Length: 321
Image 1 (cartoon, rainbow, N blue to C red):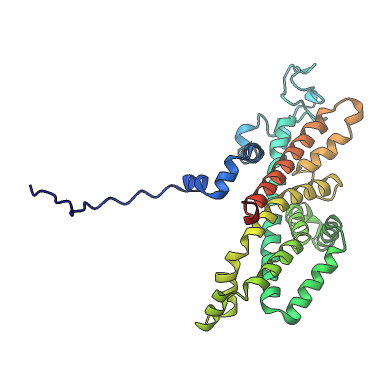
Image 2: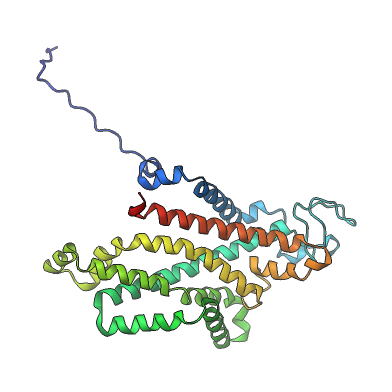
């Protein structure tokens, strides 16, 4: 075996690349997350509620929306106390129809989260598209889009959502209204929430389109849509991500508000807002749990998502690093 001289260098194996989770934890954002107890607790609450909604058919003790499983004798059962007639015990009690409140919350969370996520995605896609067009093209395109945004901002978002919901419900035939109610709700909330995405993206696009890399892309023959999608869009997503996180909580609250007013989710597919509206009718008769637990769940979900949005805004702000 040949001797190795001092000048001989043994090639070293390349260091293994860190995994996605480890890479995130070692980044600036990961460091900020690890040192923020509020963000950690908020994320845990959100994960628990989302998992409860996704796995509701397997977690819920009962299917509260299957009439064949309901027993009216179980109505108005107090939490953790045996029913006077059947002897059954329910963790969070039952409502006037004998439905398990814990099960109704899990199934109601599914509707609320689905509507919230879908509405934010609709608002995000619409707002980003219009914001990019307004910022990059300028001229009459920018004037029309931004004046439309200004007009919509003069009205409260919930009123705009109610107007869109009412118009859409009037167009849809009566026999399809209950089936399309959830999609109409998503459309109403999404169309009432696109303005803030468009304004932020338009402002960021006005800055980015004057950068050197955009001028270089034009020199090599890139088209306008390609420059907007492949070059400008990735550089304006950071503030959009923060707005989307906060908008998710606002969309969930908007859905709950519309359902509480009786113009949101249908009675056959009740969300948290519908459950709160039902429980409100029994608050002063002593059955406090029918209102309290759905309202507490909505509060925990909206507050946790908002706190995550606040943390994300600070973590992505280079001036605070």
